[in-house]
Length: 565
Image (tube, rainbow, N blue to C red; front, side, top):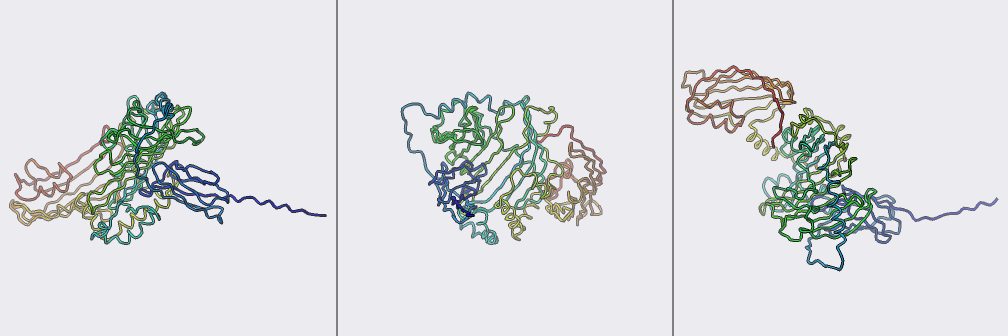
């Protein structure tokens, strides 16, 4: 018996995975071309900037190509069948020098006319109602960190933090110092007739330098304040109206070029680049992908530069990815906004603000009763108490290693002694109280005063916080005046308790006993909770002073709950 062995040698396939990011902002770049030029094998990055490319062993490098950025190539390690290659690409500073006009109609114009013809079918404002689960992420960082800024006295205490900034910036990116990061999960509801919107924030995760209590911040980190619809003729950005590249009068404001076409998620799409015809116009630079057949906006990437003369704004970048609903119109399912705030002086850094939203569980044309929309924003009582297991299960996109480093970096900054001291001083000045476990001590600004009736007045006060109880609030103070013009004991006091029956609607009962000097027509503790005002009201010459003893009971309930911005 003879056995023949046939050996077939096949070219080994190499799988490359990675992420393409902007070297200045660290944000992922969607729909960039990743190409192996020898075989013309190519792929596009997704909305977060990730890509997967398979090449044969003959390949030696891959290149990233994207309009408005310098091309970049990196070598392939042929000994690894699976490898990761990340790119940080740099924006290209280049202006449009001239426009070449050739015979025949611009091929982009046919596509744009179809976009306008189909706006009514594709604009989500035509939906009777829509609702979805929204995941939002906000990151604020200091950028443009100059040597002069680093040499400031307070900054010298952050040397160990600066030394680790490269973890976030990467090998080729610009270093940034994160100071705030938040996540939120919410349920968003909108109905068209009448125009009503409400957002119920289910969970928030807030980390920031000097942010101890995210209660107020939680109302501002949902998706309500990050809505942009390019089907509108104009978009209001920082109180200026910018012309949409798919406005009804598109041809009057923009130059367009058809630059590419490709399959995107099973849909054949056209890529159009656009630039303002006049530099002084409030218009965008960028590109968009238009889906064939429906001629709906599939994806858009626009930039507002410093030419728009927005005060202290170096650049604004807005990116959106849209998907069709079961009723036809397309909704933005992912949005990213990056605002680069310019440095004010030579020694001052700039600020980088990043906003990201993702939508899931979309339902359309199921409007809620009008009463359901009474409140613009509501925050669930336990929104800030969600654990890591909740976030791992409910994040629409898992945190990247860089974002996890941001959280760690903020903790590091907060724990630097000089930062903790400055933060405490600011909090005491603004809020009046210092948190000590389950009790807030203060207001510190009222700890001492001097006036013509009491002489030197000393006061010690407290109130319980949410760590003590979500239902009960106790508060009180004891004050003493060294001068006694009215023959009083010199001691003043207040003691009170409140019970919160409900937060939706807000319903609370309170009882208080108070004995103190008041001024005629100014019951200071009752007309304001501002510690600065209260403190100054006890200084100098008291007008119409009198001794007051009060026993009060109150019950409050909101008949109609609203959030005013």
